[in-house]
Image (cartoon, rainbow, N blue to C red):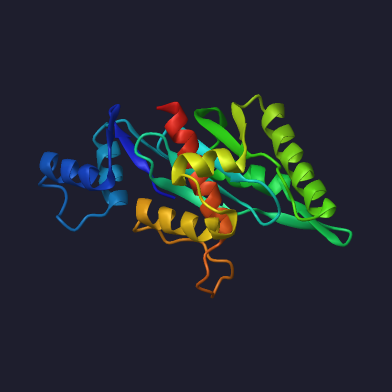
Length: 220
């Protein structure tokens, strides 16, 4: 998880914190100190050091068992964390694991749920009745989790955020377009792959990041 650090109420990135520590306490540190050494040193000298995910945040959720979830910083659009949608088996079918999703969000947001806005892709046209029912079930399970916690959430149709970010595209080619856009916007990101040892990117995670990015633009 990427973090930003507050020193005495001033927001700094890790490189700035290290530079600040060396500049102010040259007799106590070396130029090779890491971020943990720097924050510990500042704390020792009475500075108020707070470290957590950049706030406020935007959470994008690509709904469904093949979907994903992502957290972006509202401050600069950096990807704080992303993951494939957690699932569990019920009977002979998979469904979204709401408890694990909640735990993941709690961990990545450091418990600061209300610091984020949540954007969920709404169910739309599906190839089969079973897929439509699965999407609707997932959407309302996630919606219920957010509403129970009194969190600020918004539903967004797929075509709405896709058109806003990519213009008019043909649906069969949209996944390639989304991957290309995501790589362009975050060229240094290590993307989640469909399989741990594979190279194919996880479409659900890509979509979740782009949904969060669309949501971030609504908040600006």
